[in-house]
Length: 426
Image (cartoon, rainbow, N blue to C red; front, side):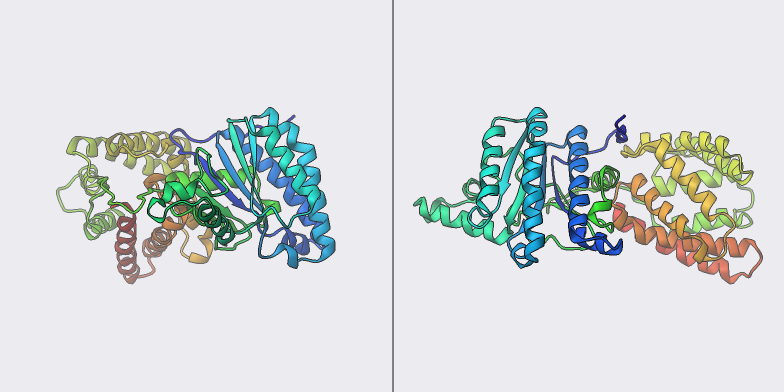
């Protein structure tokens, strides 16, 4: 029975066009004392599963980079022959499935150096699927971004177009992706820890988001692709213009001071009910009205009390109600159920710990929490998450009676945390 794909949270923005640079097949193989051919074989299986998942999720266009113009001729002859063999076999084996699923296959790259048998198969596959409109699969073989632009410019010049008629739209029509509904990629994914695009779709990718995956490609697959898409969905894409959306307007120093007083309790102003103080904190951080802040404070305090008693089921119930209020007021796209689970998980992982070496898991969870709640990439959330956990650890040390200096450090880290957060969400 086929494994059922995990669904995306409501409101997830799927990219129309993804690019996958499948790096690390040979490194994956070497780490397992296997041959480069074993790595390429496993990489191909991973690619087929990944592309199938992308189609099932509704991603229209996928571009995969098989061989670049720069390096495939420099590989050992035996490896190149094997690559040509599996490319040929893949076209034979999966053309029928691609045609059945409504996939149009398009070759990106040079057509003068690949073996004739491969070029003939590619030409046949393109002709066979040319009328399919549901999906597009661009296969980059003997491809280079600069080379594509050079070929396009040559064709443009040969067409006799006058110089003053040349514009972006015209040049688009000479690129390898001409005529496609989504020629410009939204998301470029590169595996194996490499952090460069190497010129893939150099002309088309001027506003593409990038995602760097540490796993070698044979260990990638649908689950890792889902994480990349979720990360992409959280990003606010400004496309070079002004970000006119008004986000949180809290003052980092004020919010940090209120939260620290909350932590210390004794510093809550005399004559102030704790719930009122918590409401003031929420008004500052989230910009809630007085009544909403009181309602939210009631649920947040109850959740924290239940968490202290390790009554996690009850804590989650009240925390979810709290986040529903926040989401409704701020019109943020996070899913309360997901944020609640991450918040409780972070409480569990950081609770009582006074050594940062023991909070690695908590920092990863805090990163995921901030990324989900405030709609940013995990890369953007890492700095704030690190500062948050440092503040929590200093609080734990202070509460354990290890000295007043830990409250001072907690205050400093909290201020830095809220500054780092506001840099991303303001």
